[in-house]
Length: 109
Image 1 (cartoon, rainbow, N blue to C red):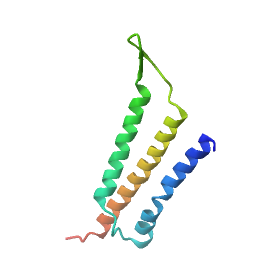
Image 2: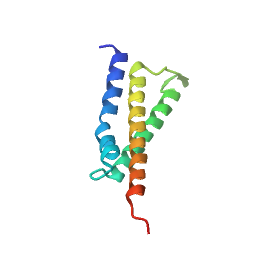
Image 3: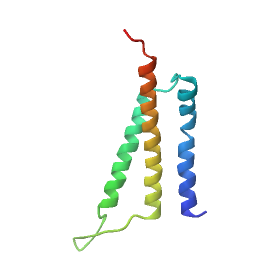
Image 4: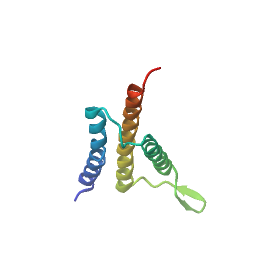
């Protein structure tokens, strides 16, 4: 299987894993069973992973005679970053949607 096909498959599967939560929130108007803490934690972890990947892309991990040797990111690195970005975007949208439903469904004094 080519790496581009594999990347597409992973990105699609990551997105598809969020569909049941979006479906429940948007169609039923209920966020029962969906922890805001869990969604926020997932979003923050994905954001930290994205920042770490960006740092690793920009740093020079190899040294030769005290001089850094820049190594370009491999296809696997781009695949990893892409999948983490898809996860971060999906969890961020889920967090925003969940917060919106909490605000709409909370009683007004």
